[in-house]
Amino acid sequence: RRVHGEHLVRFRAHAMRTSLLLVVVLAAACSGTAFFEAASPLIVFNSGRTEVSGSSVSYDWNGVTMFCTVKETSAFAVVMGELNAWPPGASNVFLATVSSAGGSASTTFSTTVGKASYTLADDLDPTVTYTISVFKMTEPDYNSPIPTPSQVTVYGVELDDGGVLLPAVVPDYEHRILFIGDSISAGYGALGQGPCVATIENESNAVAWDRVVCDALNAECQVLAWSGMGIVENYNENYGTHLPVVFKRTFASDNSSVFTGWADWVPEIVIINAGTNDYAGAHPPTPQVFGAALFAFMEQIAAAYGDRSLPFFLAVGPMSTAYEPGVHLAIESALAADYTAYFVSNIGILANASNVGCNGHPSIAGHKAM
Image (cartoon, one colour):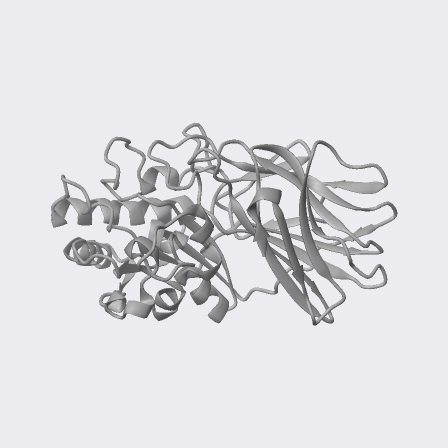
């Protein structure tokens, strides 16, 4: 349960001797603890773009996950913080999971602007080896009308004095998939059941259709999804940052950020669902303009990864079909240029009321249907 006034979350697992306790402790590491820097090779960050600066690791894209494996400790804390919050007072939300041979338990927690220590487990059995994962559920600079640098920084983890940090145990993925999209792929409003108002608390990329697909295929996903973004027009037309621009960034929310790690992680396929926002404003593009821009984006992606053979899957729906003609034009252009491209229909899914979450976006059931 979340007690908002006390910033406290407690979850007791029946499958393992663990109670997950989240307590925000402002300031530095407490005495009697062992501190391990985030940039340690024993700690793994995957499923997204990160940047190492000294001993810390920063990121802002959805779904970036930190993995740690520990033993000989009764407690585990992560020291982290965020640069900015929008709306004021809102915070990024993370899914923490503690696993052992005896089972697993999960809880969510929110970060605050500035540096803090978050205790995620306080009743571990020191004789047991545990793997802890911390998954970023929320998007870059949540639903902000004007993007502001909002990266999260992990400084390190704290164990009991004498606790041992082992090489992180990470999933043995079989595939790599890149998803690019807007609020739909971010999981905006997914935790609610419509009608309801979307907030950062009911957004979760962990239940979004991209994660459903990747879990089913045992694939490591990178998700580049940001609410309001389009290919040539955004939902909020007073800023000009579009998906083909933020695709080139390590930090989506930072205009000065430049991504250079194209060779470090190359997807096997690319799935794009973008266009709902292009047609949501007063100046929608023609199908020809949208289709040409989408095809140019496909060429940009293939060139960035140095692989013209990348298969593209272009999705339409479930919130709008206005961009479907342009998507078909992009596919026609791609096929004519010897790219591989497929059409994916998510049309009509929201006709079932149980598939509708907050603000007309897909619910958990809707994402599964997609």
